[in-house]
Amino acid sequence: MSVVLPGNHVPAQHVNLKLGPGLQQLTTAGPSRIDSTVIATRAGELRHSTNRSKWWIESNSRRYVPAPQEAVIGVVTQRIGEGYRVDIGSAHPASLDGLAFEGATKRNKPNLKVGCVVYARVSLAHKDMEPELECFDAQTRKGEGFGELKGGFIVRCGLKMCRDLLDPNHYLLPLLGGRFPHESAVGLNGRVWVSAKEIKETIAMVRCIEAADPDGGGLDAQGVKSFLETLDV
Amino acid sequence: MRPPSPSIPEKEFLFSALKESLRLDGRLPLEIRTPTFKFGEELGWVECSLGKTRVLAQVDGKMVKPQPERPFEGTITIVSEISPMASTEYEIGRPSDEEVTITRMLDKVLRRSDAVDKESLCVLAGQRVWHISLTLHFLADAGNLLDCACLAGIVALKHFRRPDIEVIGDEVTVHEPTERAPVPLAIHHTPFCFTFAFFPDATTPPVVDPSHLEQRLSAGLVSIALNAQKEICVLQKLGGVPLGTDDILRLVDVAVGKAKEMHNLVEAQLREDWAGRKVEVR
Image 1 (cartoon, rainbow over the protein chains, first blue to last red):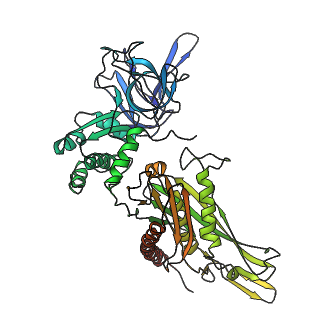
Image 2 (image 1 turned 180 degrees about the horizontal axis):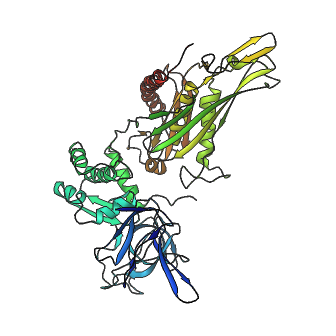
Image 3 (image 1 turned 135 degrees about the horizontal axis):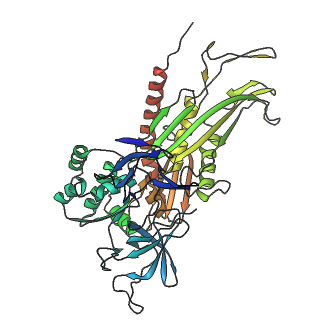
């Protein structure tokens, strides 16, 4: 494991190199050849895939910077003509087209109110433009779980925590699922939507996620398990 | 930037949970978050946190010429500007309603309630008095910034010790802390502030020490500042929830109990901190 700081050079070299979050390629055109170096743009742990083609930096933060194809949870703040303005916790609000839903047509499209919660995918995240969202899968153009989220509650956590929750081997959601049936939607913008049948079950989920968050309680699997025992669900 | 108001699911969930007397952080409706204090190296430097809400208070004393109309009284100033560090909803130079409320409330609770004896701050009548300045830094806002700020302020004033002085004729000698032990301020009483939040639905019970979301969704807030001797300093009601006399009296009863607990906690913490400081007597 190696730790890098912003500005550090990263020895990433591959014919088919793919750079992930926190890395940037600098190209300087010299008189005879083109030099390219990879530098880190944020502090964290440097990771790469086994064949050294994909490189990224693993770190925790609270500020969300939109990146394309990431699933996020947003709150509708405004209606603009045919579309919506959605707060996804980034520096600028994102825009969501009224037709960017599964099976939406000019005649038949969902009607969202201000304050509705949507689970969407970032379709465009250019640094000079407002991010754009879509509520369908890029390949299949089906809903795939995206769309308005009704009921439940939104937990706010660190970005590391929601990335961890998406890991199928992570202990927390299966642990909670073993106790009571629930639904959840994990946004990569540090928001997790949770919903269970009973109010106290939902509260238990909220408290467990907050307790397991490295940014908050920072409990480990055993700690969360014994914490859940005390919650009476 | 004013953040967008909480979403519809959050609002509905919070109201239905509160109707069953369940709070999101697992507290009972009338249970406060236990405050924690961190004392600094210097006397009068206290960081107080209520859950994730954090306020840092710092007390400083210097000698100035008194105001001509009050030659026997020292002065106290409170600096409480909320910077965007606490939350993105605060801006520099444009005080929000909440900031105005907090500033005025702090003034009432810490200064106008005569918690600190101003006459004991007099050194030489009409010529030299102590000027005590309390600076509050709001580090993080996770709800109920007001109670946290009042608590940090009063604990800092109790923690602070000014250098000992000696007056011979017109001559004032200030003794260094290494020379003579600094003396604490003369404090008449310790007021604590408790905030209760009321919700639009009248059947929902009020909650004490509201979290950020509870505060945003509340229909009205009642703040009661009182000391452990059951003396009410300030009672402030914000928002348009109609309340009967019984309701207010019930809140006061709750606050009296909390103030006693808080008084014991603060005294114990201050005693523990003082015991940990090595004072060398020569």
